[in-house]
Length: 192
Image (cartoon, rainbow, N blue to C red; front, side, top):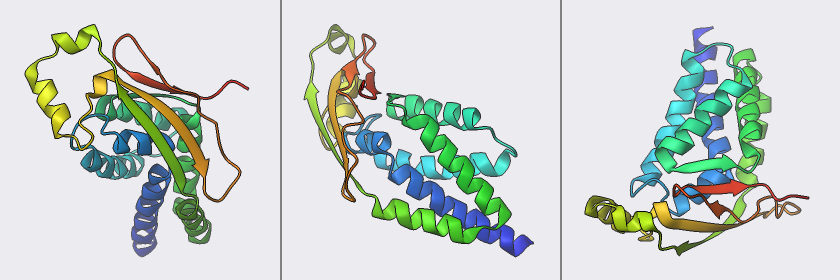
């Protein structure tokens, strides 16, 4: 039983990495250094944090996972997720965790393979926007933004999102994000 538990724990960690790695919102945040210069390290930390969250909490409900993911995105990546993907990601993580707990490794492996093949071509055009808040920021905030590869101050970023699957068929679920008054970038699903 302990051996199966160790195998399922490792498999779930791999599943979390695949799910978060294929999440367009997180990809955009990492690609554009939302949350500072150490964004790649934060993304790696997030995989471990989500894995540990499931390991230390039994019988998690989907809404609890959603709240945790949203809190991480807010706190670590300065991103509010409003594109409708959060419930889907939380549900997928709950399903994969349940399958790992039952020992259904074949189904989990299949989903990991499917996620690794389903690569998103995420294009994000970030433009600097002058805001009153920029003038009030300290020089420390400006230095942190300069350390980022794209040299963009995340509190004044406006992002245009286009997400398409190379496997085909999926495009245009996200509308152009809007800049909130408090400097947050909001990504919402297109209205149909």
